[in-house]
Length: 288
Image (cartoon, rainbow, N blue to C red; front, side):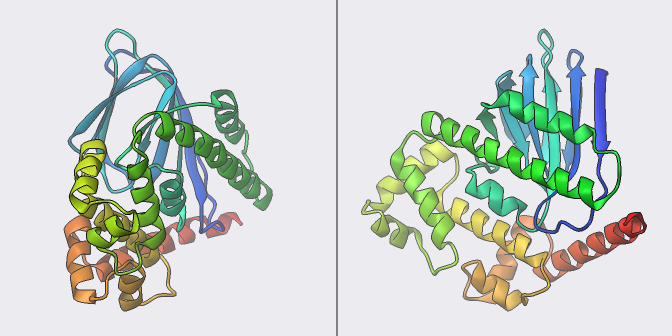
């Protein structure tokens, strides 16, 4: 069991791009665990004391004080406190049409779910301040929104430092990722990517797989489909348009790839997102 914990959820529906859902803190007992579970939103944990183990799909990571880990949506995760030195941590959960875009731009994804933490004092203070927002009002909603954006701004400094010194030591890998993030919507191939970076395709593919743990093609496909899932949460675009904006010129190819990743068609995914949002809005509309 947990020795002590605090959890608070927030019921605001005006922020569509990015909104905080809940926050909390916990001091865990030996071997306390959570999961396996699949979450519908993003959660970032900041470990302040002790250590534990975080499992994302089939990959396992040891996380210690001074580090943090990110839980992406729709992904099977499990985490457990260490037997001898159980961890304490803070967490913040959020979602939004641009949540995935921001985290990807910050250099965080399922490929690099564990990071070094800096600015820890202020990051923890932001989460503590969120606990004090008791009134359901536009003022509280705006204050929480501002704190979430500040949290991500500080988080950006953390991940930039971590990536530069840690996981992505090879500058060619950073250049490849930056190129994919900028041009994924174009008819990019691994060959054209290598040519744009003036590198041999086989060499680039080899070092990318060695350092990232996935192939370049897998990374590109995952990035495109993640962006597509975010666009499906918007009403402005047709499936054909979303396929094109995600780098697919053939809607059928896009739909098959999307179903392989999410186990449902783009149309079914969009319908489920709309229904979830409508249910949430109906439950919380009376609060405003």
